[in-house]
Length: 233
Ligand SMILES: Nc1ncnc2c1ncn2[C@@H]1O[C@H](COP(=O)(O)OP(=O)(O)OP(=O)(O)O)[C@@H](O)[C@H]1O
Ligand SMILES: [Mg+2]
Image (cartoon, rainbow, N blue to C red; front, side, top):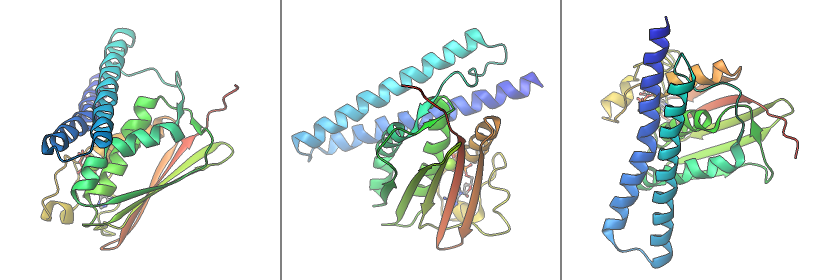
């Protein structure tokens, strides 16, 4: 049984590493075009630096976990995450992917801090995959709406897209490991069918949940509920 958990963790970890690496490659490709003004170029360098640091932090976390935990997983409830700060980083790191198909991302949230009771690395794992899905299963010039609501004991994040949608007979299967819906395979959109299975595993292990509604050909909305963290300043 322990073996199963380790294998899932390794897959999840490798999956996590993909997002910052893809982002770094994307911004280097943009820099190679060399038609950007100095401010934009500087911004790209800053993102490459911050994504490289994120990658380093993840590698350090993995090393820490492998030294300190017998199951190989990072300790639960050790950490909290200010989702209102981190969400901007996730959007920025996915912006090369969004720009490729002219998908716009809008964010609706309060101006204050919104803390959830989950380590940042795990919040990133969940939200970057769901936002990435909202971009890659979207249409050319589509939209992604992200809404964050801080309720008393939970934080609800809604991610809605104007994309290809998921048929009713497949919607319950998309959280199964390796499952990929027929329309996304037919359209040749790349993926391994692991992101949502990992996201669901993590969020449920922290007493949160993920729900999805979809209108095929029109839109899909994921609703993720995180447990709140009370922070005394
Ligand atoms: N927003 C969405 N709109 C339409 N289909 C979606 C959306 N999100 C997920 N899906 C469908 O659910 C499947 C599973 O998603 P999941 O994120 O687990 O895997 P993936 O995106 O294929 O690969 P990866 O492991 O790289 O995330 C996708 O292959 C796609 O068919
Ligand atoms: Mg995915």
